[in-house]
Amino acid sequence: MNTSRRQRVCVLGSTGSIGTNTLDVLARHPEQYEVFALSAMSRVDALLAQCLQWKPRFAVMPEEAAALELRRLLREQGSRTEVLSGVQALSEVAAHPEVDAVMAAIVGAAGLAPCLAAARAGKRLMLANKEAIVVGGALFMQAVEQGGATLLPVDSEHSAIFQCLPEDRSTWAQRIDHIVLTASGGPFRQRDPATLAEVTPEQACAHPNWVMGRKISVDSATMMNKALEVIEARWLFNLKPEQIRVLIHPQSIIHSMVVCRDNSVLAQLGTPDMRVPIAYALSFPARIESGASRLDLLAGKDLCFEVADEPRFPGLYLSWQALKAEEGATAVLNAANEVAVAAFLDRHLRFDQIHALNAEVLATVHPQAGQCQSLEGLLALDAQARQAARERIEKLRA
Ligand SMILES: NC(=O)C1=CN([C@@H]2O[C@H](COP(=O)(O)OP(=O)(O)OC[C@H]3O[C@@H](n4cnc5c(N)ncnc54)[C@H](OP(=O)(O)O)[C@@H]3O)[C@@H](O)[C@H]2O)C=CC1
Ligand SMILES: CC(=O)[C@@H](O)[C@H](O)COP(=O)(O)O
Ligand SMILES: [Mn+2]
Image (cartoon, rainbow, N blue to C red; front, side, top):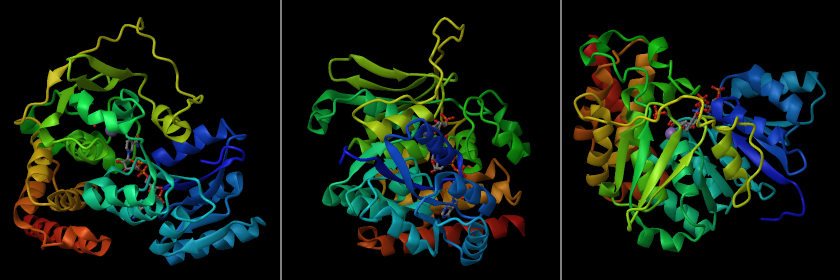
């Protein structure tokens, strides 16, 4: 990385929870970073405000109508930011020769193509968008390796594991016995499972410790978030499925742990604030001020742990099932879950039906040989699983 000038950062999904936290960290270090490109899906006003503040070279809105509106509003304000449209534009800005670092903060499989583009172009790729690596799997990791990219986890648990490991990745396999991903248990940890049919999107999105986008909040409530994180950890740290364990820790203070071969346990702790992993991904191997408040161990919060048992959290266990199934099964599981969560948020599916739908699609949609070796193949598999999920939802609603 060239350190003699400011680092040019592309923030994909800049209007979301991770995107705005990223801009908050960047604002603390104007001498080190500048914003090269921003992107959003539909929130024109939010992206307009960000463009006026950050003056990026490019702003991307995949849909033409939203891009036109943003272009018009920016012109009115005399802004020189160029507005691009079309999904391909996300990959173009992510791989732009003048970009140093890409924050992948789009939600869902829609973020896979720009992640691959950034990886192939050898960028510092800061990965919040866990669905991209869950879908991309081996193809994603090949792109990182072949492009010479620096892949840095932003998901809090994976950042914690990363912070517990030495910089030299070649030592990881020898040193790790297994890892423990901590899970808060979400808003329904203590709720009678028999009443889950009644929960509303508002209740499911009320996470006890983190303020996040709606999709990941629902995933935390079903524990599909942890299921996606198990798959994410498999790829980020090159682990076997049985080397990844999950433990409920309701306070979200220990962000995850590495259990070494000698049974030494390394953990990373901190207040639940995504600006810490974001700042570390931006500055690694150095550390910069993040804006997060410091953990006060005398503040009276006990650190508690519970088993994540299968009857209460069946969604979690689909991760190991998918990892042990044929290549591409994790992409099928992710697609089913994206459709199920969207249907739940639209009140077309009950909360307690999300798991059954995911399990059913995972059991019935199978990749074709070689389908996971290209982006096009993976996107076709993703589309097939989405279609199967939608058809099942239609049947349930009939
Ligand atoms: N929030 C958190 O604390 C954490 C999030 N993550 C992961 O980070 C990612 C982002 O999460 P979060 O910030 O909470 O999500 P948000 O929903 O808050 O933000 C998503 C961002 O992506 C944009 N977007 C949505 N759909 C598309 C699409 N199809 N194509 C392009 N852009 C799109 C949104 O634009 P618009 O605003 O216009 O809708 C927004 O900028 C997820 O993968 C999540 O799992 C991981 C760990 C923690
Ligand atoms: C902040 C973050 O990384 C989220 O993925 C968080 O971990 C969600 O909390 P759960 O442990 O409830 O899934
Ligand atoms: Mn997480």
